[in-house]
Image (cartoon, rainbow, N blue to C red):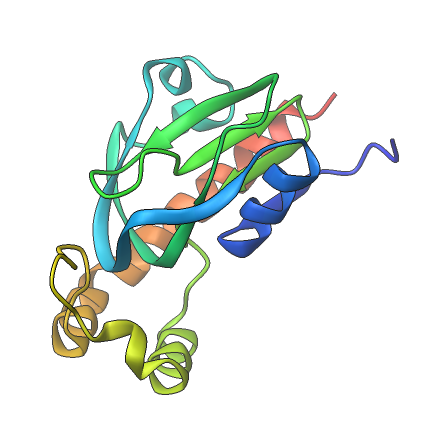
Length: 159
């Protein structure tokens, strides 16, 4: 009601979904590392999401997922997790994936959560720490650029 823009990332998106009547549950797959995200057809026409590439790399670090809340629009998915992003109204965005990550932030997460990177049977979407670091060299700049594009689109779309 205050007219403020709200962006929830990962757990933040899950909490927003829950507050809007959605369900948060364990995802079929853990998703840890760098994997592609694809926009949904509705996102291609959306004033905020349409500035992103149709498919782009993002950092993932989750084992849970959210349902798309009623009246929200489904914006993105990945091979491992169908619900990667949603928009609710014109001021609320939920992203399951990470565009905000920095090199130091990623190292802190990896150091603090080493068990997350241990792939068990059926963990098809969990990358080894060396692969995560290697991919980060090229992808951290790309996700930062996509985050700035997204934030610029939010600013331009505000009434």
